[in-house]
Amino acid sequence: MKTELEAVSSVKKRLKVEVPSDLVTQARAQAVSELGKKAKVEGFRPGHIPPQIIEKKFGHELQQMTIEKVVDQTLGLAFEQAKLRPISKPEINPGMWSAVGNFSYTATFEVLPEMTLKDYKGLKLEKTEVKVESKEIEEELKRLQATMTQLEPTPTETALAIGHVAIIDFKGLADGKRFQGGEAKDYVIEMGTGNMLADFEAGLKGAKAGEKKELRFEYPKDYFNKELAGKEAKFDVTVKQIRKKNVPELNDDFAKDLGNYKNLNEVRDDVNKQIATTKENQQKGELYNQILKQLVDQNKFDLPESLVQSELAYMLNDIAQEMKRRGQKVEDLNVEEAIKELKPDAEFRVRSFLVLDQVAEDAKLEVTEQEMENRLAAIAKGLKKPPAEIKAYYEKNKMVGSLQTRILHEKALEFVLNEAKIKVVKPKKEKK
Image (cartoon, rainbow, N blue to C red):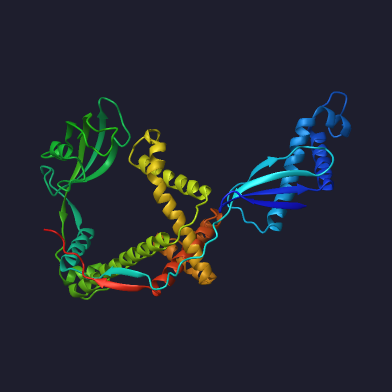
């Protein structure tokens, strides 16, 4: 078998494959046999049709089957022979067909770009000094306080007011029509938090447990759900319960109720550490972004279009899922405009992926089995599920490879980060 390689571009190749006649004859015989088993010809039982009849009656179909078999049986070997690793589905163009003699075809496909990265040791990076403000600690303490807050029943004559928590049933119409998310039972609303539309809350103010209310208002014209923006709303609401919040005091007893703390100062210290850790993780993410931008800017190479299209499809799917969550119609998405807007980001992601692959290869980085086990265990802990269940899920859904790549790229980023020159700057003061 002979092969001849042509470079369409640095990432697109065309391979001509010449298949010897004996392999063509063998593939043709297999095609004749398979057609004979399923073909129906008057006067013959299936499986007992003479080959010459098959060739006469099913000439075109026989030719197509033979070509498919020849390609299936030789293309992988041809790639191996030419030392090629395609990353896209090959486009096959058969040559002139002859039942006897050699047969040629071409396969056009994309490959990864060959690259030699510019020196990435000593990159100049900038990070913000990690500093935890006292107000950040107080805000987190308030959040913890909210988690420990108890909801207590109120007397039946209590009128719903700011600070109360109400449990309600509601049914809504927009311009006289039902809509997604317009109906709920045992819905919890905290008055004054702004989680519901101001007109909705205002209409409930003063209601008592067991009371039914009819609310009418107009959705704001700039409402996030375009399906409802500017429409007339009508809600039938039943106030089932009204409860008041019993907020615990921030003291040593509160600390002990939280868990393994002796006093409130220990809680403050722990909160301080947690906020600092969060900021350090965010800071590392920002450093990673700086690294990627510099690596991509410094190294120019052609991109395989198939990888860009694959990334665009992934990004469009994310947008579609988000639209569904918001109750918007996916059909309203202007795909052409979205692709135009998303393509630069898609190209940056693909370039980042390829550059990190190259860093890992240059630095001879690998992902060990133990590192995979540790990551799966961490994921399982976060989801509060057994590690074996998470591992089985990743294996079943063929996600092990992508997780391995993610860890490898993290190691590549860490490798570059450890070689970088980092300048520490003071955090910017918030504008009053």
